[in-house]
Image (cartoon, rainbow over all chains, first blue to last red; front, side, top):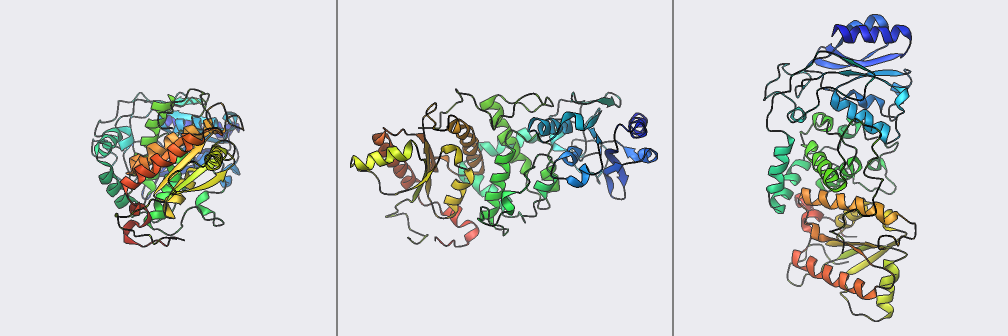
Length: 290
Length: 153
């Protein structure tokens, strides 16, 4: 923590960056913090409740953050993958951001919950996470961390769903998606939902029914999932932001897997790898085409 | 248009086909001028290229009463715009994985490459799709989720 605060202070004093985006303790748990003066660097924290993927503030859809000037962002290994994806998709230039990597031993599911990491509290995405520190960063702080507690991660839940017959799976998703209230929090929190104008907001023609009804909800979630295919790094922020508790990360993970299997694309924090959707190979598999 | 809630007996599927202007549309035209007999269940929507077909088109077709969808365009290496069908191929591979994961029978969506000279192949695609979708039955699960009646306009 000392190391992080001193680094943030130094970067702000030198004028290398004009804002450091990190986490602070708030009245309701850990929350994102925008530190613009060196004195305030003392309020920065990083611990198991630093849940938020701060890469979302680098999304070009957020001009209010851009206006603060050049940012330094504190990133866990998973967040760095989001930054890499933004660079890969030409939404961000590498030189426009300073990345402060933190060594991470997993975070809890909720920033306002208990801080202790147990198989019950640990975030689902951390359960099968292998990366303790980001490769894509300018500075790396913190001590080496142990692996987070293992538990039934996303992969296991995905497997259980895939084993169901089609009709049961339909019933499951119809039940889940019927609860969607179309608040679009999943879109707003996502670091990689960067369309200037979302197709869900278009009314002429209206492609996606805007009322919270299963039919439009399905169209919306299918669109969101497909737009995230090959982009989503599985940070799970959509699911955390969802007020209806819909397991959105499962849909994203499914497509992540499909992209990995079909196009050999692995989520990584290497921005040099081309994005799988938008590229193609002449010999892509086409067993489903007559 | 036909009322939405048809019973299974005497069910005739409504199939929407999104086809590219340069290959499949011309192929379908050839099938017509060659007087090939085929299932009359398909309504064709012509687009410039398979690369222009947003998966949302398919979703919309299901919402508005289609029981099945055909997406068809030029064979690989034949695209009028050089690479539209290659992009479409990746997109629809993922779309297919997605709908299957959500519990939609992927057999409701047929993808095919039909060139301008393959009138007979177009007939086969149409017949096979009509057959498959007829067996699958009406897609009321999508049209009328949660019991609300959709208006088929």
